[in-house]
Image (tube, rainbow, N blue to C red; front, side, top):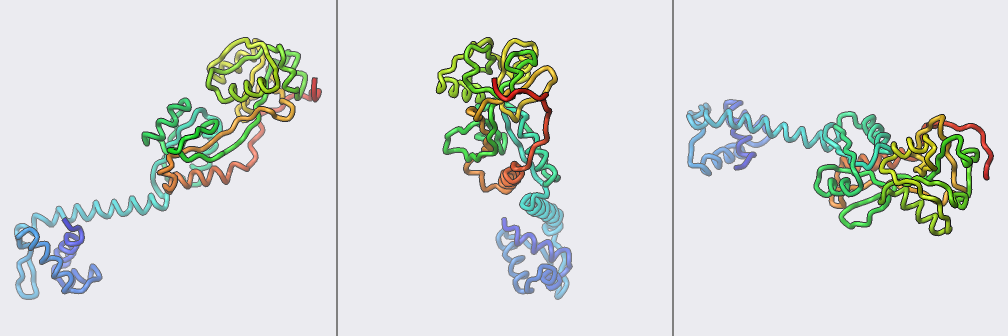
Length: 304
């Protein structure tokens, strides 16, 4: 059914004449008359009784009027939704991430710029974040490392060195930085298999032929930090994810030989979406701003 013909019928019914309906629509009277006649002919009905210059709704016309009014209201709501969404005055953005680091600052920056967009965050592992993107459960993914897949568009957000951290009484804690070779034989705690930080560190250790003493595999950053606080061993974490504590000290690796990277992902077919594009553009522009200092350690020697 033509919404144009229904809109014309509604205007004529509201205005009480074809000429007044034409003026309301900004059309000529012959055009309006033709559209109403076409609607009547399409369904073999009579919508108006013509009494000279006066018109009256027929029984069918009276029944159609509230339906046409309701459709007009829905059409206006659809127009407003599309217009406001296109201008980012309303809408939703669902973000998937492997952890809270980075994604909170991204969402906060976007919320301040586009307060009328409803935001949500879903945390999971890398596989679930990519699966949610593929199944349209989320719109944007924040992941560590680059996953080569033509189905996804990816852009680098940040690159951070991996730092070590140890209990303040650990021999290495007196140094501000150490060479990677200083880890030879040291008790090292590592994350679960598949951890981006672990993979990057293991690659660097292998390349430099350094063999630490692997003490324990730990499946979360929080548990790893607790183990270091208890003096079980030395931990490794992305510099951006380190949380200061008076019981532990960070130790930088000379030359920053180990780094992790954070990427922003979306489905390649959706990269032209306005809400997704606005998020990617905003967080990319804001990533150069300096992050607040989390904590500072005591003065230490530069190297062992």
